[in-house]
Image (tube, rainbow, N blue to C red; front, top):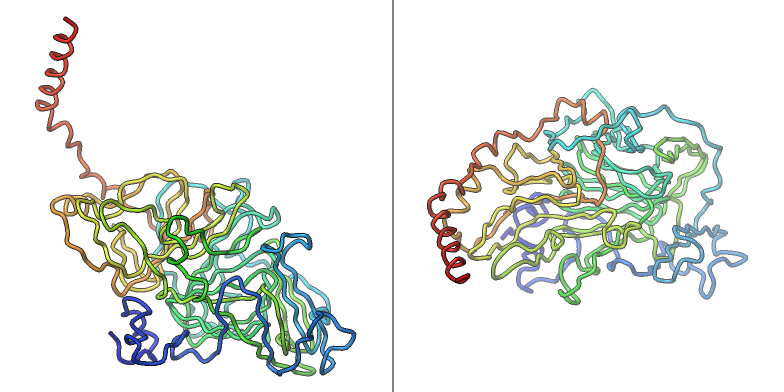
Length: 490
């Protein structure tokens, strides 16, 4: 157990967040000790936060005069008549409203990003081939690339203008966004840092997100990203839905990702005058630029339930079989997003983190399978034992729905010889999977990348037909059955 969890990499060695609490011998804490910000817990709550006490109006949302001459602005993310449980909104009280800008201009297309994943788009490819990518190169020291400029799209499904679909990206950057903010008008970002922490400023306050944590910035929310040196990570973008916790079913009230472990920012404002800013809007996959003469993060207070948030993956409460066989991978689901199909999600975010494996009389590696979901997988840190190819932190693996996959013969052979003991697996490692009921198409950027390699089909060549070696035994069994049938017929 680490003695000093102020070093962010020491969190990679813990088995679970519970270790940081030192068996109750110290006051418990909700965020990593090197995290500079304060947060409010509870996914799905309605929050209220004031950088200056007494700012939020009581008993109403939009009074004739807000204290300090502030402007009231509502950010509405759902239909006005959406049911109460799914109605998403936030009231912001700010120095100048977002409407105070100087118009929009088109930005040059980023050839490495994509939003239309329909097969008729010549910039994407559909393939059943099992694909993988080595870690994408970070920008060189001579290049200055921020979070927006460093976005690269890998694969996806649908189109944001249809309001249902998703995209998967990587970001590769080495510079902070300066006087520049981003608004994704298409959908929600689930951001997964892999190398380097992200210091994210939003209209609601700050989020500090490190490898081993994830954050969600929702549609229409302005943010900018500060980095310290070469930084890399993954993004799952969804259109037409919001992330939520999966249902627990027979698990009951607790387990997997618990709502109270999701952390939301507290109000923190930045007010400037005659200070040129760019606000970049992503709409329909295209980028537009708006300029304004004041900071877009001038929110003194806010309240609502449409708020960005982060989650520490070391807090995930794993569940699984304690007798025999594997449970379906839905037990690893952190967040889900609904689709129009009530029986299949648009997207799931799953993680594979340190846990006990105790199932006896059970083939322990992932069993050979074909399933309806498309699976795009990445590794945040450590080693992942469920892959047979060269799977590195920062890399990607992809399998299309209904394409068979599983481990190589050597792993199958070793796992079939003897029942392994109860053991801790995935120690010092967190891998994740973006899963969807939709088939993905692959972007030109990813398809033509020198980092791409196919899963080597030869690794399954030794999966020989063992059944035919039992020919005589089977013939005797079948002959005896035939004899019994004839005698019974008499």
